[in-house]
Image (tube, rainbow, N blue to C red):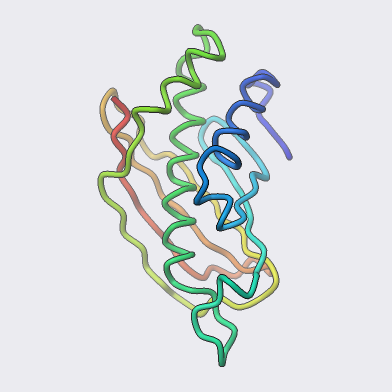
Length: 156
């Protein structure tokens, strides 16, 4: 995993634990963080039989894509919050995530999702004092864009 030199190893470990282990649905999806920057995050999921939505074509279920993009937008906001409050302790920054929640989510499905692995990317467009706005992308293993998303999150 690549991380910004901005973040302490303890913060990265805490954020990884929160995102990959404590959010149980992310475990169901199999989401794993690949990179963590203040304004951009990436993660991946591997195709598994229980994630297939169309058995005849072996396509990933649209709900998996939507949930992954939502989770990634949230992760992006977490990283942005962590970067904004570097003057606070690691524990204080991680505690801020308990207030995070999705307000609005839009997903555009551009192509069928097939393949062995998928990458999701999220960028924070704006982190306000109450609301954050994000853009997300869902790509196949060759880097082809399959879906896009935009979301707003409550942060306070």
